[in-house]
Length: 414
Image 1 (cartoon, helix red, strand yellow):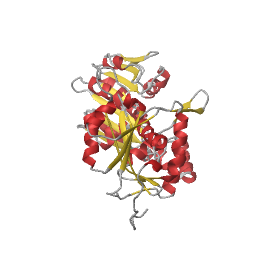
Image 2: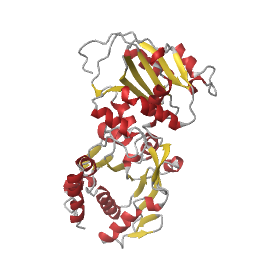
Image 3: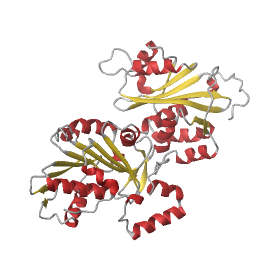
Image 4: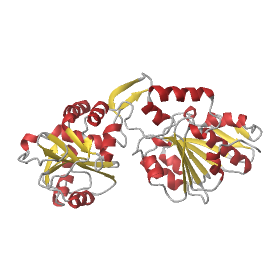
């Protein structure tokens, strides 16, 4: 069988535990993945799980793409296409499932030979933690395809920044597609001319810096324009206040801020998940700052089931004190508006606060597809905890109650 496959995608036919293709539009990543899988499935009997983070119906899957490619490749005699699955004459199977809504069902697919994760930039850490150990058959592979999103997307971090062993990681763009249509080429050229920044993201696969519907989009943009995201010196004699969002099954986030004059200088940020209180107490101690007050959300003072003491008491016993508990504000928009209002007086260290700045840039409103508009309700994902911790600062910190007798050194560059 002779099929034209762009040179960039020929490694799909050689063994690797992970085959990760990411980049920009027009690279035909999904198109070539589908072709390669259908060819492999025609050559030998394999079981292929095609998945993505959310699949509400078969229409959300790559079922239609595979169906079209079966015809395009002349493989209609090799495959039977059903409403929710595709079967090969030799016993090959293509199965379609979403990751998010039924993780227990995903765990049942341990006999899979190849798992194709499409639109993988939307897959969460939790979903990867379920999927990866499930695909454990000897010689099994995980194929990952996505358009580049944000620097701290779990998939980008997992496979591009910190690729696992035996991972083929390839960036592909329109330049790697010799079959790019004249229509797509015209679209690329037009966007390059009218909006170069958007062009770089969509077509060249460069990282995004601001989410669609970003709640703090205007504030982040202004901070960049005014030069308030830069390298900030740490003033050793100035107290550092911390602002927390405590995760249970997700991330705990901590902002570190020095009040210098009327400037709120965010000098550091820390985030991790599934760690105990002793771990975060060590983080605080190891940074070696001169601490002021640790501001924590209302639930730190709640005694959880099975605990003899509250988390506030446990933090205090670990040396994290004094702690000020910030009352819960039922209306999320009130916290958002408080953060927007104070943002203009905030400065951020661009290196130590890199992850925190990304959370603020990507904290976004939920998009209602039925109404084609954004709802005044934040979307909960990896960016939420850092944004919530920042809102603890906006809601609970009052510089007038803190010691502000600090001489600003000359030549700090701010």
